[in-house]
Length: 307
Ligand SMILES: [Zn+2]
Image 1 (cartoon, helix red, strand yellow):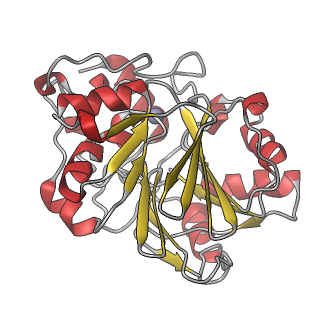
Image 2: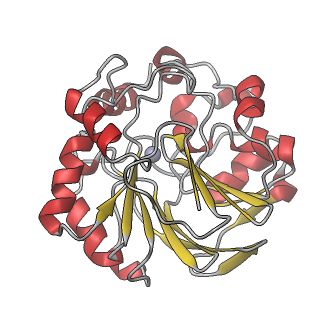
């Protein structure tokens, strides 16, 4: 057992927790009631945790897809974690590119399998490229240079230096540092080290998205203002001072789409659960304290918003 990882997960998760305010918030703010207003032909699907699929004009990019969702005991054990072929094939079709914000297991476990299955390129950190090489897929990996624009079909993608929330009681990032495994047998849950952390900006169809995969940021590295859609990771935000206000004031989004509040030890096809300490309902209140002008929309697991 890896004590720091267990401790971090206990901060975030409770497999059976279902908080009434989270349930009602997810229902009330769902895109069925709070439309995203996407341009025609553009769709956004939530894959659970920090995972999203963007589709436009026959092209698809994924961000931090995590579909296998092994149980807690597998994640904290000393055996290698394995991506599920069945689940990957069930949940993702054609993919042009996968964008990886950091390489913790709940962001990166399924990336090599999807890349192999769908022939997708993977853009991310040095650790993400190492993970791809471990799977014999180094030629499909692109080590992202912050600030550089990568064109993927109609998508213009830029990686921005960012930070991970200090989930270990506000003192440290769990499984920090670079992914250093020499072979796949060593890739247990805690071996998916964080690597460099990126915010990801995507421009497509005349609108812009900013994906914040973990609840921390470096304001001065973010050159964007007045973006359309902030995909806001909200797990662990209590360990980052004023996270919600800071990310909103920096990016001034038209619409806020929170994520990473689901209980990711439950399979994607099970009834959704909520992480114990994430508090989706509280996040809405934090947003409204900054300004009531921000629109908030939520997606159910695997739900698509279509323009
Ligand atoms: Zn993480």
